[in-house]
Length: 348
Image 1: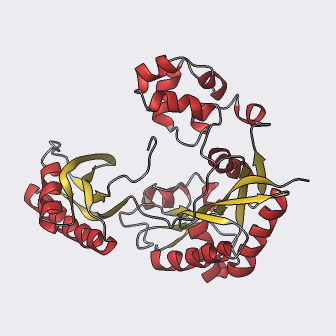
Image 2: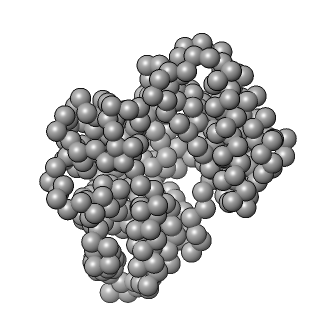
Image 3: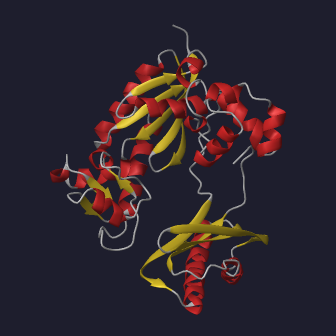
């Protein structure tokens, strides 16, 4: 068997929940929800849910209160980012000890590049190494590019290996809805359906000019390329670099006073500015998120005149964005995010 270039996508199964279960083995087999301070009576959202909790319809981003209603017997634990970061670093260090190029995507996933004859054997080795070092379960997708490897992981979960390449692309993907593709969400899928495109097969056969007219000259044709399985095959050993830094806070009691809301935004903006300076990169955009009661979220952002790390400029921009919200409903959550200048090419 000759050696070939392969892309593997490694995804740690239910990562945050798995880290917590490693620290609390007595909770194995019970529905576990992690988020906020771990108190479902307070306003916070689910960071992750164990597979047992997901069976009750509990998903990331759901209010903890809703999760508690769906599964009263669930165990709730507070989120502990430093612990997750430490375990993630151990996993990535383990991967770098293997004969692969490692491109970190986040806490719980990475692309691996390797020239090998048997990618399934490498995938098994990867899963075994992670389990031996951390005790965590992982899934590995194998592809001839990043898109296919990433999608393959979805078929591998949980705790499996799956190969998706040009050879089986049509068989596996053609009759699935467009949002089965990495990079196409529910909103875009709804617009595609309105245009008569209901499957990956139909999107692959769609007219690029028509897609460009409806979705823009960049995104429209790009959606068609995704449906064809076209993707980048180069894995680069660059560290994970956050595209933004943000802070948000959920209030236990709704805010109604505009001055207090502005004060909170200013406070969040100053904290974000500290994060930006610590990152060592200037911010190019500043965004504000407002969640109105009962659970309606809106975000707006502004491009700065020039990239900056100046706290005063970031605060000024955040307050200017806030002024564009004209909804007078009570506010339950506020957030500020600073986005760094784009360094990658292609659709984002």
